[in-house]
Length: 228
Ligand SMILES: [Fe+2]
Ligand SMILES: [Fe+2]
Image (cartoon, rainbow, N blue to C red; front, side, top):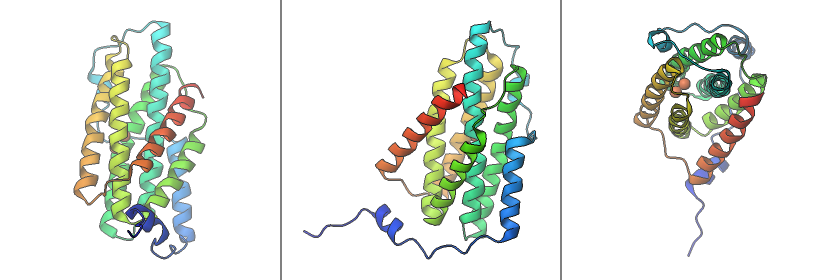
């Protein structure tokens, strides 16, 4: 019986010709976006859902726990910016480029809300954010090189894993933290919609080893980000 390589291996080894190197202008634009994500205060287009929630009542131990969780969520949103910017840069289809850029714009709300929540708690974001951004950008660019179907499949799987992670955090938040709960609930609703969009736009299911590798990487990231 003839041995057949899985489709995803074939795609890796027969990936379309290497991309043209990005122009100097696009490199400068990407550096500018990275600096804005890492150093500027993001501006949300929607109201922060936490503002409509009843005031949180947290003791010191609960506050420390929430800081760890929200720092992880902020890191996730830093990565979302990097992923979608890179996937937009790598895509050759203007409509798909626009879709990834629109996803990045929507994720900016999450970035702003989680950053604001950290500030309210008197806490700082992860010191490793430049590292997370660089790693996520590289991953997004590689996914983009495998074609829009794989890239959208990667987006769908990412959003699915974030949804599971947010469910976990919603279960771990202290009962008295209505503010963080309102933010994470809205983020979860948005991530579900992003995942559905990625599938509807042609996202291909990813092979199990890739999904497991993504889960393992996010475990490393979340463990480190709670502390550093
Ligand atoms: Fe998000
Ligand atoms: Fe999302």
